[in-house]
Length: 203
Image (cartoon, rainbow, N blue to C red; front, side):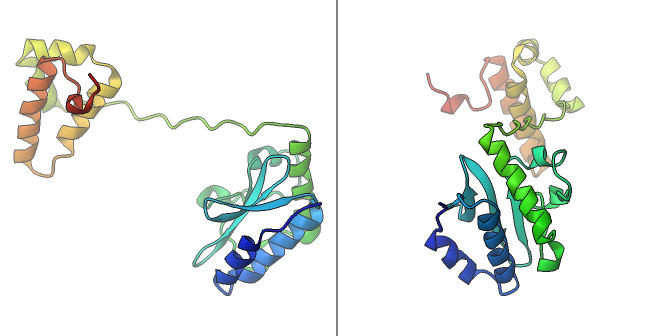
């Protein structure tokens, strides 16, 4: 049998008036479609666990959200699965009224399909880390390095993370005077083979 968490009751009671019926309805349908679901609170939001992390809902000032831990796997396996979650937490986008939710039959089918994934032990797809854009070294930075052969050679030998730290430190200066001071210090430290945060590195 499933369980309910009194903290979820308190969460719903504190939610915005428009959000309360939405959250209550989602909670009801989740329990109906998956009777063994376990309620809990994670990251200050109501979560429903079923043989592992399952789904969650949340209420904000102007909208609610609802989504599944393995939501991306549901897009190709069940009809009616929303695809508007790119602008909000969860796959159901920004929910502002009950009318924006799928009908109960469709919603229950989505929940049951998600439960089947957990029954089968299907793992959630790993998110690929966002790749940082290629580092662009400003011409003035390169020119300063070339004036010091030792610094230029050391910079070229640095790992990408070290080079990025120095470049970002210099270009993020708010004034030209500060930028020039940082650039001079950077060249000095680089020539000595030091990383940008060498003072905080463990020896």
